[in-house]
Each structure stands twice: as C-alpha cells, then as structure tokens.
Length: 277
Image 1: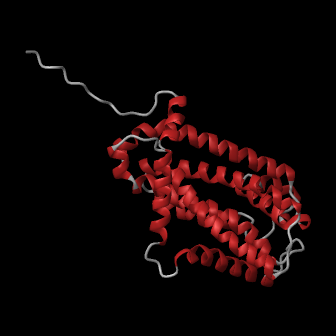
Image 2 (image 1 turned 90 degrees about the vertical axis):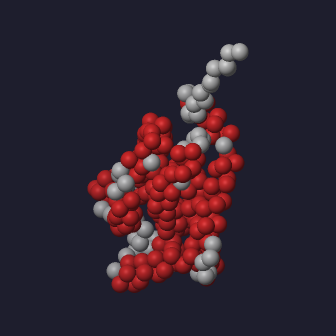
C-alpha cells in the first residue's frame, strides 16, 4: 500500500499588505499579553513600584527648573517654570522611553520570534504601549503642579489628544527604525542611550523654543520633537503660550515621514528577523 506523501508546512507572513494587517488584528491578544507582561516585569519586586515613573521626570524637572529658571533666568511664557518644564517632560519622556524599550524589544523576545510566526510589529508596538502607561502615570505630577500653583488650563487642553497622537506616531516611528536596525547591527544598543541624551539637550525641554532666534526657528524645527513639545505646551499652558505654525507643520510632516518610512523598512526586513536574531 502506497504511503501518503509528506506535506511541508511553511509558516510565513501574509504575502499582501491586506493579509498582514489582518494578521495584526488576529494576533491582538498577543499584543495585549506582551504589553501587560512588560508592565508587570517593569515594576515587579521594586521597592516603590510605579513611583519610579514619577520620580525620574520629577527630579529632572527640578534640575531644569533650578538651572534654566533660577540660574539662567530664562523666560517662562508667563507660567510657573516647573509647569513649563513638565509640559515638555511628558512627551519627551514618553518618546525617549519608547525608543529605549522598542530598540531592544526584538532581541529580548528572540526565542519567541524564532519559534512561531506572528506579525513582528506586535513586539515593538507593545513596548511603546508600556512607555505610554508611564506617560499617563507621569501626568499625575502635572496635575499636582497645576493644583499647587492654582493654574487652570484654557479650552486648548481639549486639543491635547491630538498632540498625544503625534507623540505616539513619533515614538512608534523611531522605535520601529531602531528595533529593526538593532537586530542586524547589535551595536545600536550603545547608540540609543547617546541619541536619547543628545536629543534631550537639543529639544526645548528645559526652556521655551521661543528663545531661539526667529531666523533659526524653522531650522530648529527639523527636530520632530520640537513641534510635539511646542504643541503640548500650547495645549496645556493656554493663552500664555504661542505656537510657531511653520515650524510645527514642518515637525508634523517629519513625524509623518518617520512613521511611514519606519513601517516600510520594518516590513522590508521583517522576514529576516528569525534567521538573523
């Protein structure tokens, strides 16, 4: 009696973009699991738990307030300097944390990638969600500062979700680029901390971007986080803050390019992750 021919099962990503995005929806439970696992791991067996998400931005805000507000006496746009700083600390800490977590996410989950197929985009995206949880927790400090200084935001606060979406797009765009590059070039894990530290100094976190000379403001806005931070301040600080529209539109366009190019590059190299990692 003839033996049935053996069949070979090949597990691979959807051949079309429509199939791929459909797979993302099918594996949404894995996305939830990875995000929840990373949240638990981050705060498990820590002495003060989620307070770490409050301590780091708070201490940074204190240092920047002393250096730029008290010693350098830079303008604060008519609001208490701690609020000016922390309105920028929120998007910057979210972006910086997302870059750090996403860049190592594929390496950390190497065993999972090499054993089973699922859209690899799930892994760095879940890392960004973990950073977004820290962002929400850190927002409690801003609320506390507003209560302490009796600061009441204007109607512009209603536009804050729009600027959060822009920050989210920038975080995912940068995170996908670094995650994909770190798989092939492992020395990127040493580059990321430098990029985060350097970016902090060239972004208007400890000072208002209004101090930049007018002829340089558009060039300064080539840093996508300038538009994001200015948008947050415009929404949170109300009438005391102005938005440099040409620079904001330039930053917004660059965030769009960053997001689209990162999705293209990540999809291009995604099939090789299991072999290289």
